[in-house]
Image (tube, rainbow, N blue to C red):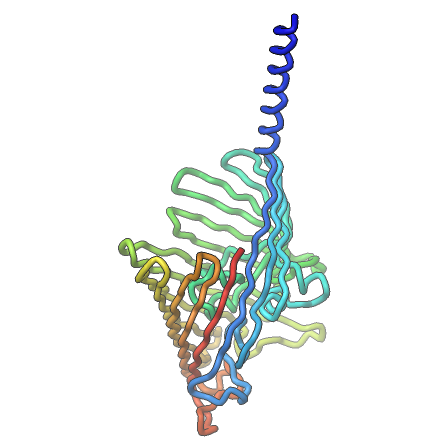
Length: 356
């Protein structure tokens, strides 16, 4: 009887342990994030002139803070949630810092893995448009492109991701209008779609009303491994919109009211396990229905990326942007070192990014 009782207890223990192990496998909680800071000085202009590149983030001279973010993820079985909190100038710019909540919440969404091939996500999530992202740790270049800066940073809505096969994927979304991350008070919504094939993505976005801001955008994002050490990233986009009105019925952004277009190449070469070199070459311009001569930019950004103990990334960067029209409005107060009006701006930046 003692042997039978002992064997019974042992069997029960094995069953309970197996159940606990299975429950542990089904539930997971992770915390990750990054912190970054940088130093920047202009080469072609005085640092105190008030000039800046016409792109988002990293627009200060001297020593400056980028952002800090903490991402908490919890998954239980087929469902889960993600909360991404940000602070610092880059985080405030990415969320438009319209109130206390917007100033710290970058992403906040829940998801349901309906099946192995289908996932539903609802809440606030970063945009699928463009080659670059908000978090600097996920970009090769520290400064951002005009294409990324001109599109939405995040969306508030519902999206469905489908794995159609090993090579094809599809995403469909209905969202609040462009960068309206709280509520849609105008009765207008936006619609998005993404078709993916082996790392190449065709992205579509459409705002349903004239007050929505972005209008229609088609965007291609992808890249190719030219060799084991050489990768070529590609981004191209075309955007057009109706007039955007303010509360008084006046037209906003009258100079650049019809849209933008552009393309960027991202050749990146890995020299060693710790160091890589990358270039971003970009052409960006505005277009108008009436054929006005609107400004465009040609930019070149050369960035080195040195990894220290896998967590700390040091990025020295040289950037040169040249305008076709010095009075185009993309820059502010662009002058050379003699104080004369200029059509180009260059800078050196040294950034440090820590990920955890």
